[in-house]
Length: 149
Image 1 (cartoon, helix red, strand yellow):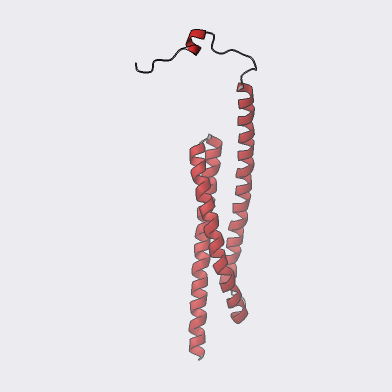
Image 2: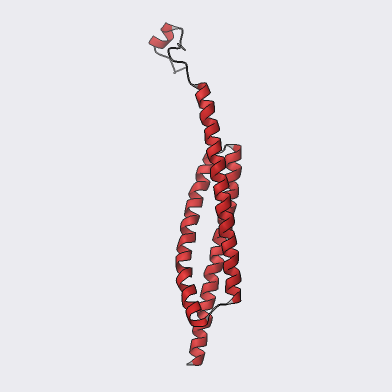
């Protein structure tokens, strides 16, 4: 029976480490996407930003789903085997990655809000004056435009 319990413990810790490593990879991917978002915001590349936001949303969903698997596995492991220094080290690193991701995400959101406000101000300056006439030639405005040439 003892070898069976040891095999179960080894299998559980192996599976838990696999999920923790997967979670680490997901966070690293998320940080890369946040860096790309930052550059897109700075450069004003809206199409790229839209794609990166979609990637970000997918990664966040994946991170949450992996976390839903990790938490019960950790609880089972801790309740039957106590603390493990290697697992604690990996979890500490994951917590640091999560903190870094949250900080970068917040910085990107602030930068994006600032950029949106800049664009709003630029647009306000471009608004036509009420009552202004932009087509002085009435024949042009009343007639049809030949687009066949």
